[in-house]
Amino acid sequence: MKLLSPSFVQLCHQLSDLQFHDGTALGQSLKMTRTAIWKYIKKLQGYGVEVECVKGKGYRLHRPLYLLNSDVISNVLIKQTQQHAEIVLFESLPSTNHYLHHEGETTTKVALAEHQSQGRGRFARAWHSPFGQNIYMSIRYLIEKDPSELGGLSLSIGVSLCQALEKWIPLKTPLSLKWPNDILFDAKKLAGILIEMRAEAHNACLLTIGIGLNVNMDSPRDEAIQQPWISLKQITQQEQNRNLFVGELAAAILTGLVRFETQGFQAFIDEWEKRDYLKDQSIQVQSGRYVYKGTGAGVDLLGQLVLIDEQQERRTFAAGESSLLK
Ligand code: BTN
Image (cartoon, rainbow, N blue to C red; front, side, top):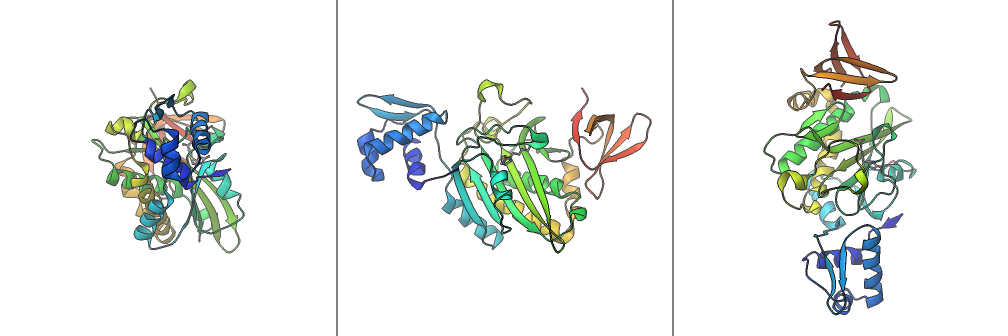
């Protein structure tokens, strides 16, 4: 588990003009030795970042690498939520969700990483987490509700995330939500949400909400992602500076959690319906060992997926995996 060091962030910032910088000049401006600079360059290359090294000229990046900056993120968080949440930035760790969920604390905390070596998705799938390209964020929050009252929570988080993204990134068509909480653009996955929970004493539940958002990823190596996906860079045709909106995303989720805590899923259902990817479509739902086919008929107030099956029977699902039938 390595925390993100400010000098590493500054080095990447300086190299993000995509010009050659020689080791001595970089060392002088960052008050580091040439050897320390060289070690950082090796580290970047170890993470798979392309850095050109030319004798007599120095080092050059091939694409900008603006790493996460905790001051920028916490300023936005405080401004938007009026509450202080601890923020921790990692250069690399196995999984931000695993870290927060097993830290043994219950305070509100945001963990972000530039790289995850064992990023996890739903159904124990791997979440591809290349260095410096996307957002890998987890938020820990102690919600004052019994686990039985959390139906619709994961859908609400999806809604909060879509609203924040649509506010910050100009999109020609709105985002859609595939039950329970995949965020899609043009039928391709842009973001995924993984919620882990633990019941605590006194009608409270400890939540760890993990968000994986594809930001600047172009093409993952070795076909690491097994489903159609898209990134904000591909949608907007521009490299995105994650610092400009990651604080807004965290703030939107924290604000949404408070809203869910006080008003429940009914405060989100209209916004969900506007983005429901499965509504009126031929779909299938895998729930446990069984696969059900039929027509998507929205969600109920518990956040359960409603399906009208081939015998015109109404079925509801509290958990499972959904997809469109081809
Ligand atoms: C999904 O399967 O759609 C959910 C993906 C969630 C990935 C995020 S990345 C940050 C956090 N840490 C993890 O290991 N997983 C979540």
